[in-house]
Every structure is written in structure tokens, then in C-alpha cells.
Image (cartoon, rainbow, N blue to C red; front, side, top):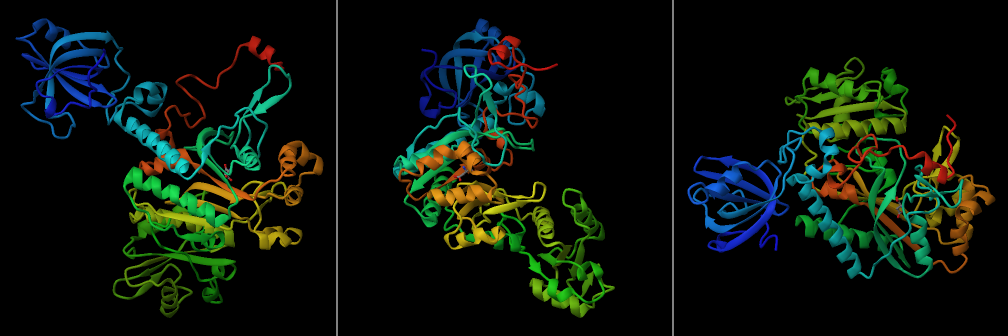
Length: 581
Ligand code: ASP
């Protein structure tokens, strides 16, 4: 037997027992007469004591142990003279009577401690060492619990976890597919699923009316910070349901996770239409931990000679409570912030509602204090508040103000990491126009059902058609999205047509689904949660990478195994792939 206990287990109740532990040397301290070694495994750290007087040879051996050596120690549990109540095992130590080195270790390239001295790149290359650190370990524990609770909860509601294939044919979700060449069929390729979308719909046709899967998805998207080419979804689908059923079921799952993982009751999740989300927050995923809703001033600011406002489609602002004390410099910085190319505003108008009740703005030339009072009234501003206003084309200005709102939320400390606010966003537009290629795309995916009452609009005004689609937003991040699906072959064909697929193309790409819909497709709908992000948010972190055991770096590389990498020419030949050099 390698060990009788783990390194996180021993307590005063074990005092007097002979135990055997195995683990990694965290560090050792040589105090002359005594040598202390901190022994670590994934359960914790236990202090080992080696006594020079009692076991001089053992003590000598212990002194030579390097960091991360793997050892096995037998000894007696004793009460510590100087207790460490910060540590679970801090009231005891193990006085060693034998020591076996199970394996030596090179000195690790960085310290395996909460606060490590290793840079990002180094830690990625030695991920297996980084995973020994408590932070990452705790993240993986959280992830495991989340997966377990998800399975328990959904199973208790009659959901079945069913695996769907990885080697498939492309499912369009708006990203590029990763493809895998076929050796047996030269010139042909499998695609890795961007999601199990079509398969879960086929399962509904098969009658598995409550399906879920914690499943890897693959999307060959452009690299962005904190986006992983492979990521995990909690993918779900239900039959004989309407939107309300799906929202209720998965609000239930979310509540269950918050309750069991974090001990938090999140209560009823508010709902907002996409149109309102855009109007009041300039975003389809508003962070509602703080208010600061948009206030439109377009009608009341025109005609006073300020051409920026006079010519704007939309004049809209936010009221930052208690921020009237912002200095000139801070206001200049905010102006610089909105003028950054990524945000692209032309300028920023501010109005300070001073504590003494006077008003001061950056457009005093055009507007009297009476005008500004009127604005303040619209904002619901009181002395001490700061109003920030942008103007321009409607959609762009809203997006810019969204960025400013989030920035102000950060600056005023309103986006607290330990506060959790969920929101359903409903009734997304069905189609999105792409200026570049002059055609409509499905905003969610082409299997999403339009709202019943909007189906006639499909022949007249695509931009007005709303989808029966919904997103679940947590603290300004989309954590889940889904829709009621089309289960009628004719409607599906119509959507393909609107999306610019010819009949042949539609049959070529989705013939299997359209055929299946001929054999009794039930009304159905579903949702998928981004599992990595959900774990990160629950863990109070912005980085999904810290919640994936072996992630890719921001350049889409795994530097530990050195992938992607070139492959053997023979392998290429077998696959029938030839490069012209
Ligand atoms: N397959 C969709 C996605 O990955 C989710 C869904 O509609 O269920 O976003």
C-alpha cells in the first residue's frame, strides 16, 4: 500500500496513529536538529518532521530532498507545537520513521505555489506542473462539480446524455469548420462539429425528447483573447415544448448550479427583449449588475446650433451617479477612451451636475443652464451626478455608449466579481444583413424558428422578422443561447431559400435533416451553455483558459505538445494530400 492517508486528511483525531503518506516535496526547511518537509498531493499539504537525534540518517536523507521529489513517508501523527490554523492539517505533523524516494525531480522551472514566479508562456509549456498549483487545481475541482451537478440535475428531470459523433459533415454555426482528411476516401473530409445541433434535432425526431450532452465543440474562428478553438458546451434539446418550458427548465439548471456550487439563491431571472437590450444598454448581453440605463435626448437637444447633435440620428447618454467630481483630466481620458479606434466615437459631451446644484457642460456655448436642467430631469440626475452623452448614427452610437457604460461601471466599482446577475434576452432578430456580401445570414442558426406571428414578414421585410431565440446572460457575458426550432419542412426550405441556398445546395448540405423532417418531427427546441465560460464566471475569473486542463494559448497553439505541427510526408501521402512547393 503506497499510502494510508492523503496529505489533506490528518487532524488532531489522528494523533498517535502510524500513517504512510505519499506525495511531492513542496519545500523543506533545515533547522539543524530538525528538518521539516511540506508534502503535497492534490488534497493538501502535510508537514513532515525529521529528527536528527532520533533518526540521523533519515534526517540527512530528508535534507537532500529537492523540490517536487516524489516520496513516501511513514511516521507518527503528533500535535504541532506551533500550530498553523490557516492549513487544514496545520494542527498536526508526521514525525517520520522511514522515507522512500519514489522518484527524483528536476528543479521545476517555476515555483509551484499560489503566487508563482512563472510567466504565462513558461507555465503553458509546463502545464502539467502548473496544474499542481492550488489555483488551477481548485478551478478543475469546480469544473468537475459543475459537470456532476449538471448531470445529476438534468438526469433527475428525465434528460438522457447521448453522445453524438465528432467526425461529421459541416454544420453551419457561423464559424469555419476544422476538417479531417479521410485516408480511405482521398479528397474527402470530415468536419469536426461546431456543435451537435443537427444531431440533437435528429434525436428529437427519434423520440429522445429530453437530451443533453456535455460535449466538445470545435470552431476555427479568428483568434481573440480568451477564445478556444475547442470548447465545451452543455448541449440540450427538448421535444413538445414552447419557449417558456425551455426558459423554465434551464433557469432551473442555472439556479441549481448556483445553489449547489456557490450557495447562492439567484431568484427569478428577469427577461428583456433584444430591442430593449439594444435601446437601454446598446448590447445584446447587458451587464445588469448596475443600472446606468441609456437615456435618449434626440428630440430635446436639436435646434440650438450645435451641429453634432442637430445632424445626429441619435443623441443618447448615461448618468454616472456621484461622478460629478471627475476632474478635467479624467473627462479627457474618457473622451480619449470613446475615440479609440476600436470604439470609434467622434467625441464625448459631458454635463456635471455640481453638488451646489449648478450645471456645467462641455457644450455651454449652445445650451443654457435651463436646457441642461431639462436634460438632467430626463436622466433623473441629481446634484453630484455626471451625464455623458454621445451622438451619431443609431446602432453605432449605442454600441459606443455600451463600451462607455461598461467602462464607467468598472471605474465606479459597480461590476463586482462576487455579485451575480442573470438575464434572459428574448426575441432576437431572425436575420442579420451583411453589408460586405449583400445578403442575410441567420443570426442564431438556420434551424431557428421565426416567431409565428412574423412568418408572413418573411416575404416582405426580413429585417423585421424576429426569431424565437433566447440568450441567457450572466454579468454581461452570454452563457447560453438557443431557440425553438423549425420542425416543418416547408418552413425550413423557405428559410434556406431566404439565406440564399439554392434548392440543390440545401439538399446537398442538409438533405438528411429535411428528409428526417418528413418522418414525424415533433415540435422541439433547445439551448446550449458555454461550459468553460460558465465555470470561469462561477470561479470569479475572466479567463476560460484557467478552467480548462489543457488549453491552447491565444495563438491557438498547444505549446506543451507543440501543436499544430507538420506531419510526416508519408502520412500526407497516405491521406492523398500533396502540397505544391
Ligand atoms: N447549437 C447552438 C449553439 O451552439 C445552441 C442551440 O441552438 O442549442 O450556439
